[in-house]
Amino acid sequence: MDGVQEQPEPKLGRFGRYWLYGLLGLLGLSFLTHEFDRTTVLYSPHNFLGFAFLACGITGLVSAGVGIWQSAGRPLWRRVHATFALWFVGTLSTFFLFSSISSLIQNALDFPPEKVRTFDTYLRIGRAYRAYGKPGGWVIQPEPIWGNIDIKRDDFEFMAKHRRPGDPGNDPDEISSKGYFCAHVTMQQSGKSFRVMHAGSHALPRGSVVVCPEGQSTFGG
Image (cartoon, rainbow, N blue to C red):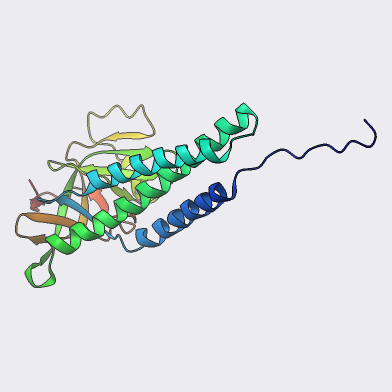
């Protein structure tokens, strides 16, 4: 009607916006800490990843509560959207941050410089697969000690073109190695703890994956 101004739709409350900005800051900080995570621990008596799951669960629930509280007065579907968005960003940012921090703490505790032995070896690969989503990439899982180690696309394509005898090769995103392929890696040992260098949040250097050479000793073999 003429002369009647349309009321603006209520926005997310000020505290809710500040909470979202803080969560985005945590997400940015997680990318920074990931840059320092350059090792993959294959075995350690300590495991702090449970704290990362606990932290992201708590932050996700609190963020969802903030979304419900700070979106009061908005249409129902917008309240649901705001609540889900805050829950998702809170869970994701906290998990990324605490998982990388837990990895850094684990490495500091288990691998003091004065007790570390460094050596090159061939790490037998059980399987390789392509990971979709974010960040995605190409991953190998060693054997007999399980783990996830990123590799370059060129190395994954090398494995796909030279599949082991008996591997039908029907799935372009899945490669069965069963010890046929190896990753030539630098490893460190401290007591009973072992880790792969130049890995972690980064892919192994290009050319690391080879067909396991005969007569060469392999880690865990």
